[in-house]
Every structure is written in structure tokens, then in C-alpha cells.
Image (tube, rainbow, N blue to C red; front, top):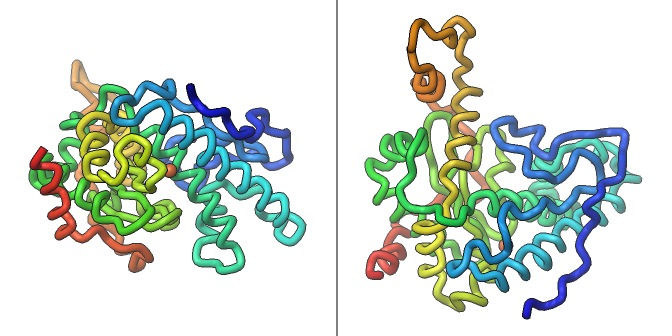
Length: 299
Ligand SMILES: [Fe+2]
């Protein structure tokens, strides 16, 4: 029997004067469902709690969603309410704007940690899909081949980044300009801190994500997530939105002549060179961490 849940944050947002999408500052990313009014709400899971078993059991999902994720939402709303008297601008900031404005601000560590963990978890749930995982199709398949040479190389490096993250954190596949990049972040840190770096998928490697099911076998858990659960259609949707934002197609090019299929022309244009970004404040995934992935290949 599942444990009793902690009280959830309200799912009925109060009407406020400043409706704003939680993802308003990252247009390639989907609205994850935090609501357009304050307080932020806990987005519904996109599947049943047991849908990802056996890789992620219903028990793990229950604790992870109802205790950890819900707790971050409740704490974020409390911290925002406490901060509004001194900073009214917080009332109209998107969740991503709050993450960016509070990052590396010692006076707002709690606000950053909870805002980032709310967004990271809402994104993470969407990155998983019952029956997902394995070799992708669509735009991401081509991008992986261009960047890594082969899906197997990407898989090895993605697993290596997740397994090699010391302590709590996240592994990410991101797109920056026309280039895919694998990153890992510690604790609550997140690629959405950096404008221009768009996350495509993430794997939660906090122990609460896997310890009830896999105990200390993080490599086993991560390998199963990659092989069985990654939501490639979700990744493709973000990547295609990112590519459209970089290369808006003139209206006249969208008009088909005869039976010309327009999908390829719209979604796979040649992208411009990546825009150099400031040195990331998190550790770039060391490809040598792929040695950890050798554990996975032995399976
Ligand atoms: Fe988590």
C-alpha cells in the first residue's frame, strides 16, 4: 500500500493581475503546466504513477511526485509570498525568469533551489514515456548522428554523464545553436539558467529518483531509463521548435508547389553556427565519464 501523501499545493490558482506562462522566457520550450497565475501549481503527471514500472515503480513515483516535487512547489510559493513585499517584480516573472534572476544570488538561494527544482521535475516527467527509450527517429536522430557520429556513442556519453555526476544532480541533453551538447548539473542547477541553451531531455540522478528501486545501482537505473523510457517525441518537438526559432522559414517557402512535402524543408534547415555563450557555471560532462557507461554495456 502506498504511503499517505503530504498535502499538495493548491491545484486551483488564484486569479492575479499578471498572468504569465512559466516558460515565457524560453519560447522553444513547452508550457509545463505551472499555471499563468500565482501561486504556481503542481502540474499533473502525464501518466499513471505505475506507468513507468518496472524501471520506476509506483512507490518511487509516488514519493518523488507527491513529496519531493510537491514540496518544491509549496516552498517556492511560500518564499515568493515572503519576498513580494520587498520585490514586487517577482509577481510578474515567469518561473524561468525567477530561476535566472535568483541564480548565483546568495540572498535568494532558497528561491533559486525551489524554483529550479520545480521546473526540473516538471520537465523530467515529460522526458519519460511508457514504452519509450532506445534509438530515436525524427530530427533528433539526425542531430545525434551529426554531433556524436552514432546513436551508440550518444547513449554511452549520456549514461556516462548521469552516472558520473558526483552526488545529487541531473544529466541533460541540450541544444545550443545547431549543436547538441551533454551537460550535467549539481543539485538544483539547470540549463534554463542560461539563455540560448535549450534543454531537450534530462535524467534525475538524485537518490530519491531511484534508491527505493535500485538502491546504489545508479548505472542500472540510468541505463534502463535511456533504453526504456526516454520520450523522443517530446525531444523532437522541442528541437523542431528551436530550429524554427533559429531559421524562420519565409512564408513563400512554406507554400507547397504541387505535392512538395514541406516537413523536411521546414524542420531540417541548415542552422547557423552556434553563438558562443559565457562559460557555463556547471561542469560540462567530461566524455571520459563514459567509462562509467562501460558498466552499462556489461549488462
Ligand atoms: Fe527528483
